[in-house]
Length: 89
Image (cartoon, rainbow, N blue to C red; front, top):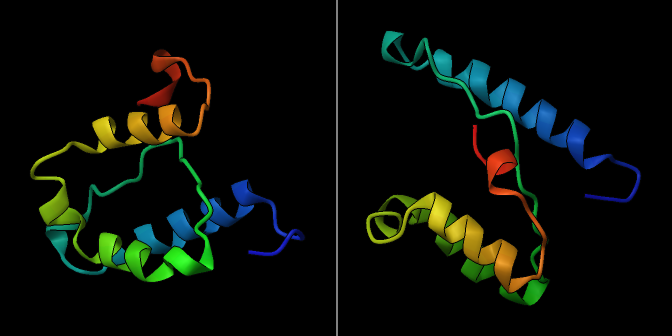
């Protein structure tokens, strides 16, 4: 993503378009929605293969560690200050 694109606009488009797509997959998805917030982290090109592998195996990965636990670890690892009451819907 280049510097000419605002992250919030990018995420807004991805959420809107993917939500519409998911709802076309069947009636069981008619109530699908994304949470309001988002987190965005960059990935070094040297770690791209690992990042892709992680995304493809998220379901298996999150059997042992919740998304919330992992997200907190990211925030803490990179010294990002946060207030728990604003992180989750």
